[in-house]
Length: 344
Ligand code: EPU
Image (tube, rainbow, N blue to C red; front, top):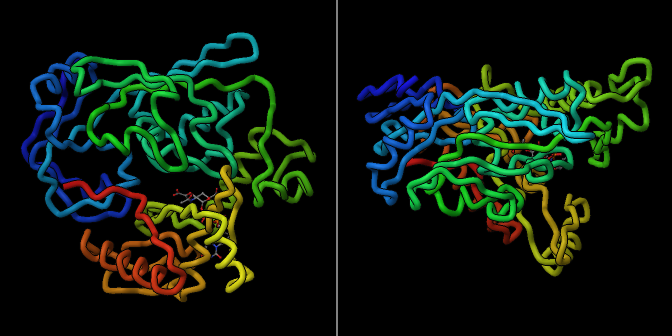
């Protein structure tokens, strides 16, 4: 099928999980690779454009002035090759539907990434991660249209420059339009349960939801879902984009001096003697948890999440974010970086 929709004005209010009132004036939907490349070929590669996935990492303005494209690619294939399972998933598939399907088929590797909102195509952009697993751990390759080279390309993980919540897709915004993600899962049960809240599964499987004390992919998925639901607001009832700030990574010297001042500081050692600080802890200790500013607020169970109280605009959300950033800089000398993107 060709391009299916090409309208001048499209309401995006229900297409972003912060539920910000927003519309696009130049909106295009594609379900066909050729139609997508024909459209992109004629556009200057320098022209900013917004690819709309699940809308779970966006702070939209009232009017998006750049072209907006929405992809309908929803192919999903699993192929067993020995113990490995090669998964080819179209960009439009909801990430958690892919996780549910993999778990139901007994394929291991992404069960810790259960219930993360957003689409498969958006997952590599910020290298989604949770409970000790990141997308890059299972990624084989990415199919994308390269607007600079004006052709479809296959990118290996090395070419994507993955880091914590970072990738080439964030650094070179707009260059690549991801159409398909290829993962390698496993038929072998190789559970990753070292992250704090998952250790409960090892210590007391039955209490943590495993059936007959048996750990399974489904038990891990169920537990992750339970933990996430306990802290993170459901965007359908309380609009939000998950973690609003990245956890800052600081040199050992900064960590040590903060730890002296704040013995309860939560931090995780990284490679190169760096430390990742729990931004939620910093914001919480600074007294922001549950605070309301106009139409925006800090979630009352996870200080790293900002929520729309109902009528917030992009400015309301960014004003609250900026007040928090100022405070964290003043108190701890730490610069917090906003994770979701604010398109033009
Ligand atoms: N904490 C507080 N107060 C708060 C929030 C957190 O004291 O209000 C403390 C917690 O007690 C804990 C520490 O801070 O000791 C870390 O909190 P948590 O385990 O909830 O994880 P996080 O670092 O806040 C990150 C990811 C989440 C991911 C979880 C689990 C980022 C920016 N966020 O959050 O990702 O689910 O770890 O792996 O890295 C997302 O990106 O939207 C997201 C939810």
